[in-house]
Length: 179
Image (cartoon, rainbow, N blue to C red; front, side, top):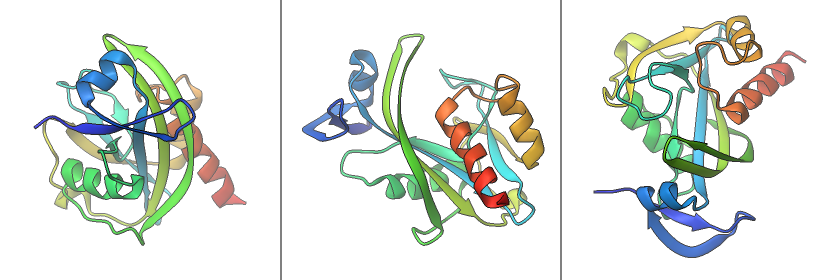
């Protein structure tokens, strides 16, 4: 069954329309996306390596979990669903810290991504050997040291996806946390 999204107006308000993922990406319709970073007690961030089968950013390191917000969902609900699907682990809405939001508009191949993005953090120690990865989405997971990931971000997204907003919010979170 194809995913369906709430179509948003350019100012982020709901239009009252619902469209398929394919139509949203083909026609550049505005919709919501979410991004989550899990940070452990050592200040390391858990990243997933995107499957080689992904249309966008195959084989690159990416956020812990994320994706589109389905029609009728809130962002935090999408995060809870996405982490369960992609990594086979559970979080609750009480685990989640909302960091902020941004808009992004880009075209990669035939996909027009016009997103209202929401960014979240979960502070949690997770044994990655117990995760159950969704093979069509994720090929592996790894904890990255804070300085390593910041260096990659600053080095033109070396080995990671070029999702600017996501990484900017992660850097800002680390800066805030160290003050």
